[in-house]
Image (cartoon, rainbow, N blue to C red):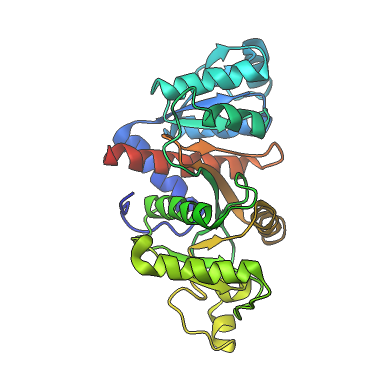
Length: 315
C-alpha cells in the first residue's frame, strides 16, 4: 500500500478519515456475519449515519430486525439476508466477498474460528497472501500515536518466514493509515541476545533479514522489551540508540498468546480504543469480540473502511 495522506495518530482521526473516504468514494459496503450483537448493530447504524459504511446484515432476518427495532435505532431499515445456521451464514458472507458485492467482512455473533476457516478456504479464492494475520490497531491514552500489535489473533506460533509475512501485513495496514515508513519493533524479554533463548535469537535474525532490504518501506529493529519499544526515556536509560526504540508504530510478537495478552491488557488497564483487522485476504476482515464496547466496534469499522478505501485507490 502507498501512503494515504498524513499519518493518523488517534482513533478519532481514523473515524474522521473514514468519513472523508465515505464522502469521496461512497460508503464501504460491509457484510456482517451473524448480526445479532447489540453494540455491533449500534456501531453499524452510527457508521451508516456518518456515511462510513453501507451495511448488509446476514443471519436470521426476524431476529435481526426485531433487535434493530428494540434498540430504537430508527432510520432506514437495513438490508438483511435471511440465512439460518452459522455455517451457512459464513458461506453466504464469503460468497458476497468473492463476488465483489462487499468491500469489508465483519464478524458478528458467530465463531471466529468458523468464519476464518471458511474465508481462508480455497473455495472462494479470497486469500491474497501466503500468511494471513491479525493486526490490533490501538489508540492508547498517553502514547503519541497509534500502535499496531501483531499477531494476536490468527497464527499461533509463527516460524521465521511467517513472521516476515506478518510484519509485511502490518506494514501495509500502517501505511494505509498514513505512516510513510512504519517503525517495527521485534518484541523480546531483553535486548541482550542470549543463545539459550530461541525467541531472542530468532528476533535478532529476523531484524538482520529485514535490514537486508527484504522489508521495503519500513525500518525494523530488535529484540527490544516493551518499555524500550514505546518509551524514549526507557531506551535512553538502557543506552539503546535506534531509530525505532521509543517510537514504535508496530510491535511484532512471537506468539498469539503474547499478542493477545498485551493487547487486552492495554485495553483493560490503559483504556485503549481498539480496532482489530485480519489482513492478507482480498478485502479487510474486521474482528470484534462480543464484549467489545460500541466505541471499539466503531473503531474497528473505521479502520477497515480506511484500509478498504486505500485498496480502491490502488486498484
